Length: 390
Image (cartoon, rainbow, N blue to C red; front, side, top):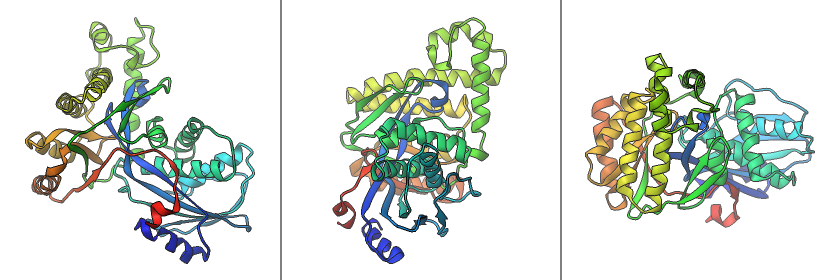
């Protein structure tokens, strides 16, 4: 499809696209439900994402078109905007609103978006759209934002314009991603380390449960509140700002402060998961995929049993993977409640893995998942026309 984007742009707007941009989706390799607890996560950019072709117009109109959605709004440039229902164009429109609110002088644009990220899969299609739009506006209008500024701006759009109480990991990963590297990101300080992620003869399999995960309708915000309750309890004796300010040993010494059994389980997951990320960075750096895979499985078990954000669909994929000798490790990725799992699969065995996991999952769940192969890719950037035109 991407090879036809320039033709589609010409057909829609009767002119050539002047600029093209790409922003990836992301998976989180390990470190789940950590971003709002001030700890370490390890996302990477993937080779699926959002393409944006742009040309200016002189009519002062923002023309939003997408090959993924039918809505084709033409919206006049004005000083402020509000969210329109659950429409896809809210994500780029929110970016425009923030640029205008910051005093930037924009002009009309004709825009064509195309994404090959499965929608509602937990691979951050929303962050991908936000970041590619922000990067494009920053480039086209010489707005002077740093890449980190764009990440923070896109997160503000998600929180305040869209209304989803997410952390910063998704926007950070799709902006700062590097080929064949995972990002060990401290969500409190935003310091990060690019960790060499040579998967050797393995590739990243992304398995979409095809059970849509809508964050705003899930128990995501409930988990945020439960973590805050755990933090409040621990603060009775510990001088901390986030759950991830302590390690597992310190938590075990003070866990008696949390008297609610459910809250205790939530905190145990978060603090142990944060320690797993540190171990995972060492394993990846040493090309120890067996150890990294063990940590992936341990992460999934914790998300299933302690944090309770998995489900039979995600559990079925991981259960199959544990018995496939060509899989080094697997886990759910993203917020849970549906969405995707990931697995490290030997490239030579990918087709067999895909066939077998689809068969196993369908027998357990009653419908098929979708399986994709991906590499670890680069973050947001401008594209040369030849990249799309081929």
